[in-house]
Image (cartoon, rainbow, N blue to C red; front, side):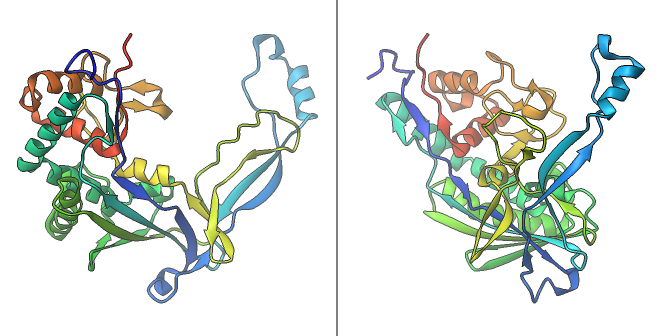
Length: 339
C-alpha cells in the first residue's frame, strides 16, 4: 500500500470510447442512399513553390530575393480530393463504448474504493447522462469531420446504436445546451445509450457512424496527416504524408482513430472563463494555440482529483465533477510518482 492513504503511485484507467479508422469515400449526394461510393485514394504530387518565407534582416535585399527565386522550393506532398463527378465526402467508422468507469490499475485499495464510490455517486446523480449527451452531440454535429466540415452545403449523419437509427441533418456546432426539438430528443436518447455503459448498467454499446458532407466536385478533402520521424530534408523529398487504411483489396484515405475520439471528447466548457468547448485534457491544453486553459494547482485534473479523494466528490462543484469523470472516461495514467 502507498504510504499516504490518499495517494496511489500506480493509477490508470482504460479508455471507454474506442474508434475504428474513419474511411473516406466519394459519392454523388443524390446517390448516397444507394451507393457507398468510391474509396478515395491518397495521391502524390510534386510542385515548384516560390520562396516567400520571412527573410533574416541581413537577407532582406532585392538581390537576395531574386537569388531565391532562381532557387525554387521543390515540394512533393500527398493530397486527397473528390472526383470531378463526386460532390459528397462520405466518412464511415465504428465506435465502441465498453466497460463501466473504474481503475484498471491501482496499487492503493483505499484510493480505488474511494474512486469507485465517487463514480457510483456521480452515476446516481445522473452525471453520466450529461456526459453521454455531449458525446452524442459531437456525433450529431459532425465535429469529428474537423476541417472537412468547413464549406459544407449540406450534412447528414446517421448513427446506428442497438438497432436504433438516428439521423441528424445540418446540426450546427452550437453550445451543447442550445439544441432544440427533434435533434435535442434524439441526442438525449443516444446519450442515454452511452451513459448506460459508463454507469455500469450495460456492458457495451456499438455505434455505426455514416456521415455525408456535400461539398463541390473535385474539391480537396483532408484525411489525417502522418507523423514523419525522419527529419532529413532534401529537394523534392515528400514533406506531407496522409493516412490511408485497408478497405477490402484497396486503400482509402482516412482519419486516425485518435483524431475521431479527440473530437468526441471535445466537451470541456467547464474551465475558468470558458469561451468554447475544448478536448478533455489534464491541463486543458490546446496544441494549435499553444495554450493550457486549466492552470496547475488551480483547475487542472490532478488538483481536483486529489481534493475529491481527500474530501469527497461533493467537495467539487458540479462542473468540476463532470470534468473529472470525463477524464476517467478518456483514460490515461494518473499515478502519483512522488517528487
